[in-house]
Length: 252
Length: 310
Image 1 (cartoon, rainbow over the protein chains, first blue to last red):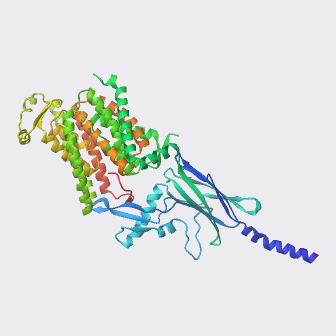
Image 2: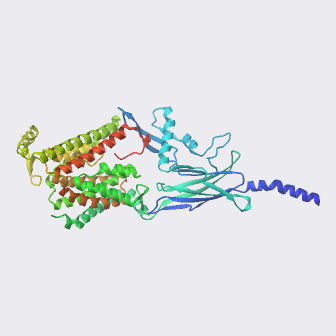
């Protein structure tokens, strides 16, 4: 009996970490659908998740890659001006990366698939005259997107704490800029231990234009001529109304 | 709290900032008879609006500001409709020619260089000439009134040449007699330049009316606004159909500010002397020219940028 108790105790001691490790990581977003209404000015999405103890977490929020044509500046006759176009491929329309550590953690012995260096290595350019300029323009492209807050790296933005069931809780606030394009975004949690990916979880984030902005955008894209005439008529009417309002004072 | 989402620009912006921008540019529009596109579009881009949307929505708000300004000037008897129609007709022809010229330059790969140089040279020449001429004129009036008798009646080669042209017309409001060919030709010229530079052309048209058509400054302002109104109606509708870049919310806030500003500007233009108006406009044109020149000389912050705008 005593022997059996010892075996049971030993099994419990060795299995507990394994069970804890096997407990699945979780991620949820609040809200998981963002409405762009008339007064939208960006929003903070709250991230809540769980991971096993002793691990590190990376969360990426990214949109679908869309080809983008940009203007390249250069010097002509001593003056800076547009000297050509560059087509950028494999660039997501939004890329936010958050981590539970003070820097964005890297994998050991293999390429890290997240963070700005990985993003830069995936970019493809057409229209760059020299191969050695690829590096310069990938850096410039990232700087352009960072200046619009569409690409952001937020190390340490995920806070860790204890949660029931022996898991570690993750909480964080992710700022979505006012410029975020409507669409579907992928949210990916990667859990790391000792420089290796232990587990990955995916969630979806939907960003949708609603109400008056949606109505106006739909009209602008689907009924361009009507939209243009309405815009002109409103402008003329406002101009006349202002003219009438000032009539008494303007006459000599 | 004061932010509104602009659905076509795809960004949120402070209403008070837009209202203030609209008011300031509308004021200049009413004061000088310029559309103000050469000022407003760069300011909107700086405020975070994509350049294509900034330029197209600005055209829409200029429709309102120039309606308001034209109406105010019409009541004061400052719009020469006959001259305005001829310049407009020339402007449409010139604009079409200018667009073809840009296409040709783009195919040759020199478009941006030509656009930038045309911009700086035109702003520089117009600004300096108007500034010096108005300064001389102001000094003359202040110092020696007796010198006035030598002023009129010098038949220059230019005056003799245009008097010899057929289809002479009396422009009552402007108090000048010209061949219809002259405003038509000048309209074409300004139209070509405006198309190359991507602007309405008000700041080129105003000096052309003052110095080449010899129109009184107050009639120039009203007539220029009348012409700009039609140019911008055309641009707004064309942009809405082809590029979908007119943001009605953005234009609405700007135009409330600009129509108010245009009324105040029109009133003030009546109180200021023609030379004072010219010297003020020349100063603004020169400041914009210097700002563009500095942008061309200094290394840009980023070597990549979005398409569109000026």
